[in-house]
Length: 302
Length: 289
Image 1 (cartoon, helix red, strand yellow):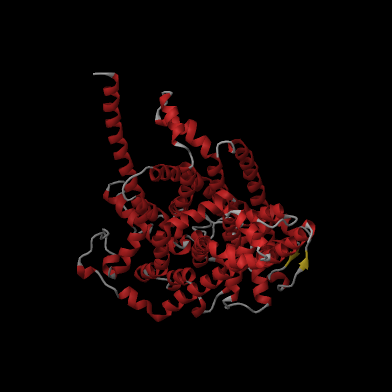
Image 2: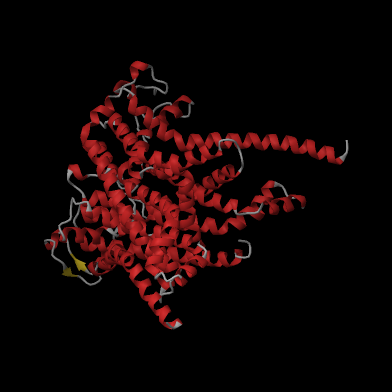
């Protein structure tokens, strides 16, 4: 058999091997997104008795003037930005501690994985209980140390409800960031730090001059994954606040879900899906571009 | 005192400080990660009076403890555990069965459009599921698959495929190529070689990936919430959330806590036994992709 024939056969086998996976991915990812693009051009809601009527870009015009959508986008942005910044700082701190050697390190690492592994929806209920107005442990502790004299409302207050959601999200997802950063820390050679300290640098300088620059790829990867997840956050908000009070924590995904499931407004829901999808793709493209740049810069080091 | 001596004493005091710093950090990490879980565990064993006591009770006496929240959950709750387990295990098996060959193709066999496929796999792993449920809901309705395990198994297989493909691909790339070359010389064709030589060596990577996909499938919420409405077909996350929304007047914290403990117990066991593999899987999926 000639080299060409072998290669051709290999290629055919390759297609056979990859096709089942591709079909499932197309069905569950590509079809719904494509379908949303198509459906967003139609009006299909209770007003049209759930039949699809062509509406051109009407749904997008409506979206442009829909204050509730812009508010949900704002809420999503606040949630995403604040939680990611906190998670990065905290995740870095945890990774730095777990990178040191101490007795029982394996156990501590195991404990640090627990929040990541537990279902968000279920732990959202646990956090709602922690932030309970009457019997919640947060109010109890704040009362005992004298910061508050009366129990305060958490999930019923617009600002504090958002704060509670962010705290719960930080708890849940910081381990993921810590794990990725820890892997990066372990790949940095200790020679670099020794050489640096011989040059007279203190640990803080080493952190900013060696650790941070060399961790840039891991930081960006963690940022990318976390951005996408936080931007689409659903479970936590749904069980903790349902978007309330009075829409103060309604994020985009909660609005989309309500539009489709509660108001049965399929055409408009599809338009919301399309816009959210496009915003996400733009943001991912930006981070991906930054990532490809840093990767080239550090390839020499890895 | 010579300079050398001075340096060693300085080093000593420095080491002590950093030791203390590390242990403070460790205690804070443990508190941060475990306190919410332990509080839920404690709540699940407290009597209703102890749960609603002000100020809160952190160290209950024996007569403030009860197992009634667990016994009250009843047998229906085990049905949810079964549903979650069944859906997660089946989708994990399918995911590995179709993900491993795909990963092998992307690692070794040159097919046209390879890098595009890989880029797409990477990008879809970032999609929030809220973008998908509308289109999938239409399919589920059209095929009359509501309240059917298939309505969850297929999406769960799909959402775990990107991770599976990325982790296994990086594993296949690390395998020595000589082995496959000599197998070919011995007359194996690609499929035989994959099944008889490569796959047995892949078992550790399959276990690593399988644990991650199990966890993700067990925890999934929005598809389960949308496609399953029948009481005895619910999975754990939705079932537990329903207990919370069941009564309008008084939220049953004890039963929720007990349900939380049972519903998350399998995951805690997985983490305890497979901590290393989980960390490997997360880093391989995120970093090497």
